[in-house]
Image (tube, rainbow, N blue to C red; front, side):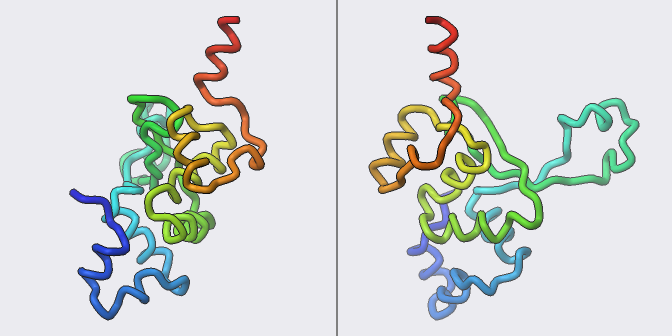
Length: 148
């Protein structure tokens, strides 16, 4: 599946593209578009110790929305950030401001951690002032610090 870009939206929605990128969309519509774009997905909270022990009240019925940040913080690492309802509009604003990097920028800001070096270089090249965000060292930087 190709990532959802403004060009694809323009093609799919023709005269409705302004609607898709309008801030007055509902959170449900925003999530639907982010799911189609493969930026977020829905899953069970399988990491929840209570769910694993089958003592959790929401056990099999509970779902969470997760934002993909694969390869943002470490190479070859499947990674996610959970998202709360009150954060959907902020994620959407980042996404429509920069379809290529917006969701990754949101994840970096949310985690308050520098991304891995290749992603950091690309964000800087894209015009982001990453140094101004006061982020904790990246995973690679932490490993290097421990070795020295």
